[in-house]
Image 1 (spheres, rainbow, N blue to C red):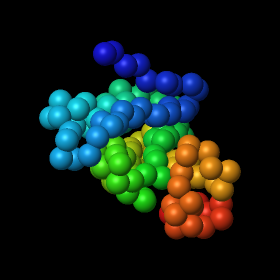
Image 2 (image 1 turned 45 degrees about the vertical axis):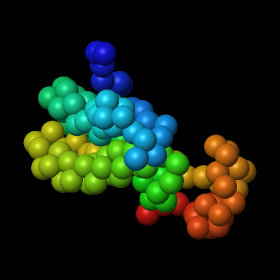
Image 3 (image 1 turned 135 degrees about the vertical axis):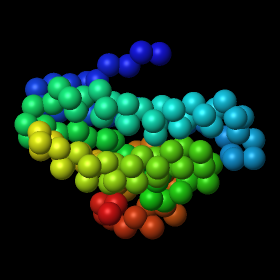
Length: 135
């Protein structure tokens, strides 16, 4: 699959994700590999492709997941890929900010509200608190 950066003016947004809908014990090696290829390696390749063409002051935004902070037991591979994406975004942001172009790399984690969007269980909502952002 060929991917092209979503570059508009001075912004690039990475929202790539793929989840192996199984537990760790049942996950097939090819599903684990695909999940990491899309969700973790994809942002790296996007940044490598975009940075040389990004104008001064450009912004790259990686879309994270609340799953990386809460650890959803039903999707541990997806949780691991998003947690890796979080860590990579932080580490890569330091490297990208030092470049002469002065681009920034940030992680945006959409949060869950008590509306129940996404079928989130009440116990998870209690852990989040009312409309609380994830640090």
